[in-house]
Amino acid sequence: MQLDPEDEQILAGEQGETRQKMLELLVALGKVFGAERLIPIRSAQVSGASYKTIGKYGLDWLTSLDAKAVVPAVLNPIGMPRGRWREMGIDPDFAKKQQAVVAAYERLGIRLECTCTPYYLHETRYGDHLAWSESSAVSYANSVIGARTNREGGPSALAAALVGKTPCYGLHLAKNRKPQLVIDVHADSSHWTIADFGALGYHAGKFVGNRVPFFRGIRPDPDQLKALGAAMAATGAVALYHVEGITPEAQRISYDISGLNVIPVEMTEISCLFKEIPVDAVAVGCPHCSPAELAEIARLLSGKVVTKPLYVFAAQGVIDKNKNSAAVIEKSGARVYADTCMVVSPAMEQYPSIMVNSGKALAYVPNMCGGKARIGTIADCIRVATE
Ligand code: F3S
Image 1 (cartoon, rainbow, N blue to C red):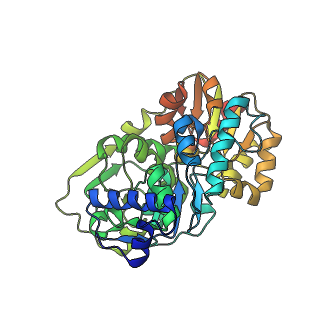
Image 2 (cartoon, protein in one colour):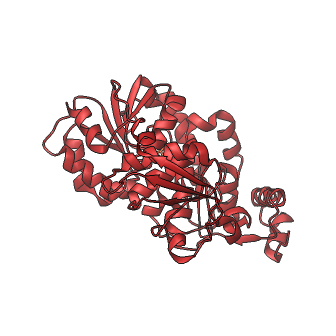
């Protein structure tokens, strides 16, 4: 792998042991995947932030590091809202450990914006090289924005943040961004909701695996694309997809899709996922809500009172800029929490059954929270939470 003089300096330990070790990790990763060089990144998004997922060994490793991020870097959702953890019913012992994880990242210069939607907070542009790790954020960056990132692990994203570079392989290279199969959706999707696109992603991820699909027959908006990609990254390992006439690379690049395998998807394969089971709590905001989603939830909740716990998750920066929506939602008795989500917070494990409007949450809640999950539209979620 070609390294520039600054890389050689770092490898020689001239910028400290942590940066040396981090660059060694990136070089080793690059060699495994055949990267010829490192490339500068515009930003990093670091997973491995919830104490629920990294535990004691992760925390010990983080506290042993000593360097500062050299590019804007944010954190993935953690196990609790930083300011309102008592209210969410978080165990004080867990909170103490989670705060130690947050403090360790803060010392490393990682911004305490704990979210899977960093693209709402910091401008990310077409063609930017990134080192992001949360799978829905990776999918959104690659597919909806046209930026370039591999699906990083927590340590490699952190290493990239501390060095400012990532190995140039995988989805950083145009040759690996071409469609590998076509999905023809045989359904009238003109009135589909975010949940419908989440359900399509839940279904498609299972047969797409880690390939790059090219969708035909749908016209999702950005929030619907977010839901589609998040779910495909959960049931499959899809880090990039294209939608004919919609996503930026499908608009700018004439991909040759003749000769690719074409897989039809019928409406019944989507609608069968909407099963009506009793639920104990409702959670929306997976991935974290956009301003438009917060406004829609506020509109649906206006003048109503919740009869079941209703959690809404969004980035703190998005909540701060949409205070009116958040206030209307909270007036109903629902809670708008930043920094965490229904999957990474241990508080959600108290509910035997959770209703969501997300294909990704439908896939993850049973394994990560131990309960059943039901998917419904946002309107259905609000109806169930207030009936
Ligand atoms: Fe984000 Fe948590 Fe869903 S990290 S994508 S809200 S599982």
